[in-house]
Image (tube, rainbow, N blue to C red; front, side, top):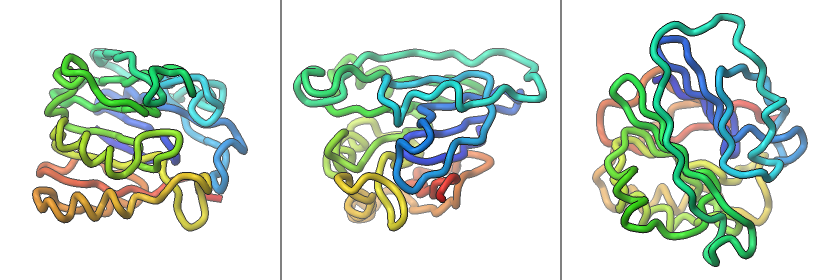
Length: 212
């Protein structure tokens, strides 16, 4: 399972079959500091319809078709805020199962998980989770959720950096500090992506691919 962090909440995942899926592509100009998306994928999945997560047309078609079995997808309905969508609407968690691994993209989750929702993603191999706050859960809540879900590999997303992101959201520093304090994960800096998931319990820190 090859993972590329395009930026914001957008990821490209490629399987050994050649199949690829893009999560939450953003529209041009919708995220400060990030350049337009220039990727191709067989499938595009968006967690909700805000411009910084919903730009199907920006993702091209792969030049080479994949061969093999299709992955399995599961969608879990949640909310974009702590008041059942009254502020920002609904959010969808997507679960991807393929080649013996399970990847979970949390979208712009802004609420707690129910016991049923937690049971459907607990112990996943890869968890992509927002940490920036304001529009989503913040670093502290994301850390608490990671403790509940206990994925093998966790990747923070939807945060700001020195040259990118919204002013009202934070960087991932507090999230990283909390993970370090717990001491049960290796901290890995993976650049813009990795060819394979780490084999050990890890916090994988990725940098946006499409910085201006």
